[in-house]
Image (cartoon, rainbow, N blue to C red; front, side, top):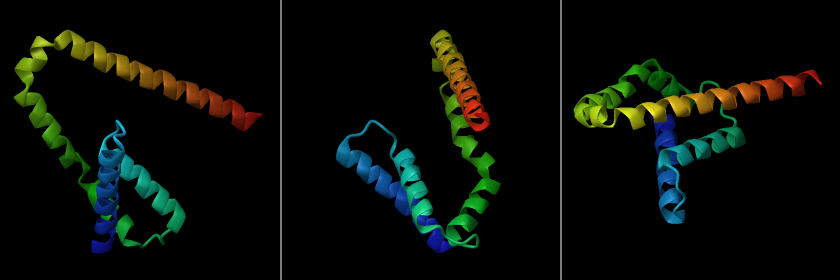
Length: 115
């Protein structure tokens, strides 16, 4: 399991270093996740590999990762109240954009699968 955790953290650090070295406007952990995906596709580890064991443990406790976000909302409640309209428009707009893109992709892939 320690080897799996090392792979996860190593990909995250590599992503962070790559972002800082290139100046790409993406979060380092997102680039690290893409690197982890490439590594997992390239190496094809066995189902009992450490990286899968670690990911199962993290997924079982996924709800704990929302605690810092909740604390941030409570800590900045006054600021959020002052900027309620832009925050609401941003949230609804991004939700709507995601819904439209997802629906479009489902329709496109459905047509491709049938024809």
